[in-house]
Image (tube, rainbow, N blue to C red; front, top):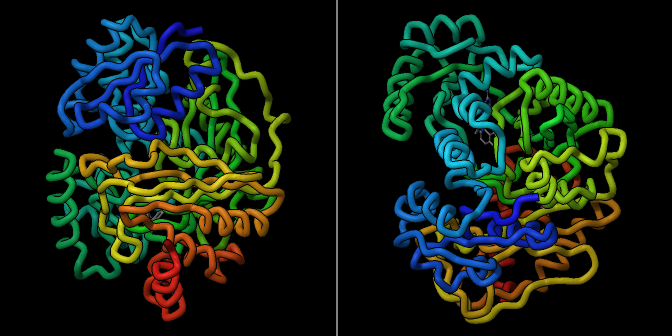
Length: 461
Ligand code: MV4
């Protein structure tokens, strides 16, 4: 096994990786910006190296600094976590050139899935269902018009270099397509230095369903079923659950089978997540693939009984998976609430010092967080404070357990979105499992939803 792993990340995911390493008997190196000197990941690791000033560009994204830190400490592998350099093909390549194992898929996989046009082409060739759309890049508004005519309105323009919703434009009628094309192209160019666009039929009220893949270096590829991530606001996920209340056993098996067959064709390795849109008719379509461990991985861990980060590290070392598809069974139900340091009504980030802190616990409750009393949430990084995850024998009990856990959570000194979670879980549509990607929008616009949210804000200590 690896002797020493450098964790190229911060916050809860850095802790998550350090914990997995400790259980595997692997020494750890934390890296940190000057602002993170007091962070828990620094204290939990065996060694720590300061890699630069607070801005991510100069620290957690600083490749030369990270590689020097790995060399000085003689780390034999780097775990990138999520975000930062986790899906950066050049970084993965440089690691391998320096004889440091990158814990993740091969650079060519990161590159293939990093561009949405090449990912879409690969997905189609590997047998995954796609929405009707352009096979490649759409060169100009005239070509877009020709495709739109073929597909039918509404359509959506997406940036090839995008993902997570950036550079997208929905077009509902022919008259505004050319204008939308120019705007989307300019946005894509400004955000990603790449103006390439493609076009697809637009699905009005999709659900976001993603399939977890694990693939070792010996060709064993299995899926760990799905997560439902339809509770989002501005492409930020807020609540995830496993299994999805929207899937029948037949659809679940089909989505898993299609995904695994495709990954075998592509010779995918390590962990990955295939994002699908599910429409109202139960049809699913490939959207994009994430080539990293994801924020919401714990709901899968709890329900499938697999330590995903441990497996990820073992697979990167070349060890074979210790389970087969037949061994994987759904055990109960898990829900994750992302607790953010933000205003619960406006969603504006709310960094600052946590003056009082008490975490929920008890049967079936897991809290993945790097926060503690007197910790200061920094303005330089994302506002994820903690992931509150519950596991129970069924969905109804899991919802009750989450409501109980949320009511125990005390965070003083800053604002959090705990009241939002309380309001969301109280929604009838959530409780019935009858929701889609417009759920948050509807909650905020509705009389009962906004009243519940205001009430939850008042009742949250
Ligand atoms: C779509 C779509 C509807 N139709 N594509 C948003 C981010 C990126 N992953 C893809 N996204 C969407 N693509 C077609 N053809 C709707 C969305 C979308 C969405 C997808 C998943 C979860 C939340 C979402 C919120 C708004 C839009």
